Image 1 (cartoon, rainbow, N blue to C red):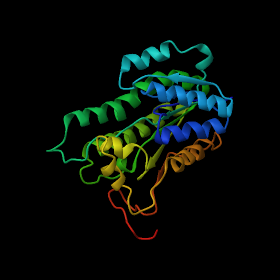
Image 2: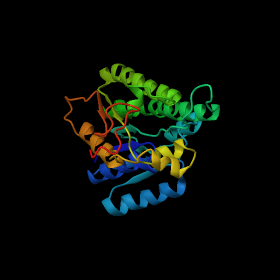
Image 3: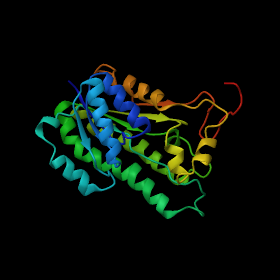
Length: 253
């Protein structure tokens, strides 16, 4: 049975992906900072799908905690086939002059450093299984939109790291892909708006956005290709969003 580690599984894309892979028979290492949600999720996955689940209750922004988790990982959990670098966030929607430095640090520490810390620790294990890395990027890593500055910058970095990993790890037989969604209605905008649910809801008014399951289905498509096939990258958008920062509202699409 295959084993996957997914970061940021307690909501949104990570949660949908965990259930999608569980349905396909994967054992899972699930990661999140909210321990109660993580425990509930582990129990439900085990009960519903009969798989084995290990909780990684670690803030991936902390390099020492990430390293310690892998140092203490039982041998029976080291045969990891898939890493899905999903954890990420946007904080704030201001121009650079009016930007909040705490917002910047949270995005840089999670979206870039956290991804690097987990990937670095995972590479020796993935070399043993000739495994797969899927990085969850964003249309913001392909285009820049007004007031998206630092978030777009972090996702452009993920795009660059995805290319670098693919080149560096090819000789080890590790495949590397990225899935880059447009507007997905999850907790993303609530976090970005510092918990203001009214503002967050308005982001998705007047058009049919993606949902987390759309992205999870795309991740599974990428992952399920035969060993001689690598989907380098794939961008998935709502039909009503032809480009980053452009949404056609109330168009009947």
